[in-house]
Image 1 (cartoon, each protein chain N blue to C red):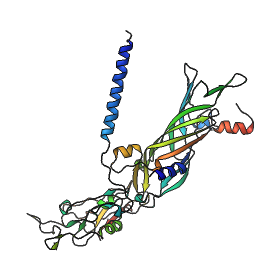
Image 2 (cartoon, helix red, strand yellow):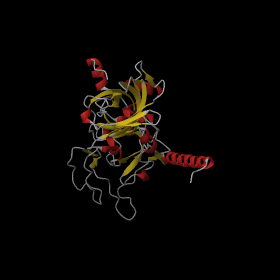
Image 3 (spheres, rainbow over the protein chains, first blue to last red):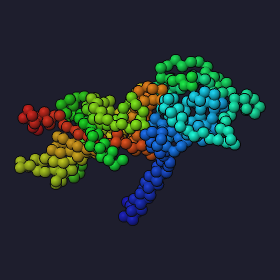
Image 4 (tube, helix red, strand yellow):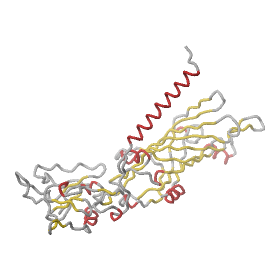
Length: 173
Length: 206
């Protein structure tokens, strides 16, 4: 049975509506808030650093975002070890920023003063109901394309084995 | 950004020689293209295409991607394969009639879908679309292309050149948190029909 012109028009409209819905769905699926593009960390707001892909990024806003034994550096938004000041996690390395670059972005951080004293980190032994172990002295961050994953860490956060591949990097010495 | 884009457009040129069988001397390297003649007399040809030479801008894999130092990069035989089609309209001014009554396809339009797969790092491949205008019976064609996705190798956090990837292209900008469209994603395609050019030089014009 042949369709009338009216039916064909309705079919075309229906197809257009479906197409519009699909396109709108795709657009809604798009990432809404892109981070700010940057070339240097000074292009970013305080509390952020410029990652390897060229976008402002941060790991933490407050020290509660960081692992035990580390604090959030308010200048670069990275978790730094309380004892050595080294990177506490692999986050910066994973974002394709070397340790030196990351620490460089952190060094100009303003020191937050709380009640007359610098905001102290969650100390190693202040965890309620047990010891709060520090992050490992040496982090094994294997992030390169095609590289082997980082060695597993045991419950205490210490390295189970040293990295064997050249694509991994050690930070926090 | 506009200035960068203009510079990118000017500098980023991709010279691709399509190996459409029947139009290229080394047509035996590529599967024969399919030609469909439409009711109006127009023809549609499509087939596989390979790029022989690619000139584009890209940031160095030896430095952090955030610097976005786009530099010209010439690549011979990029491992890029694609699907190309050419539409030859049968009416004036696209197709003219010569004095002897034979048709001469002055202008044709076409497009290509190009893809590059890097087996060792899939995220550093690319998928691109290009639109082309062909002239003089497709002896030469020029077009503009844009990357749907292109993974740019950059220096990794652990210092390995090309160990990390910057995500660029339309799809990356739409769906990836740190995706963007850069001058690296725009390129110009120049296609030459080797058979016709060689034929013209040797005096054997078909």
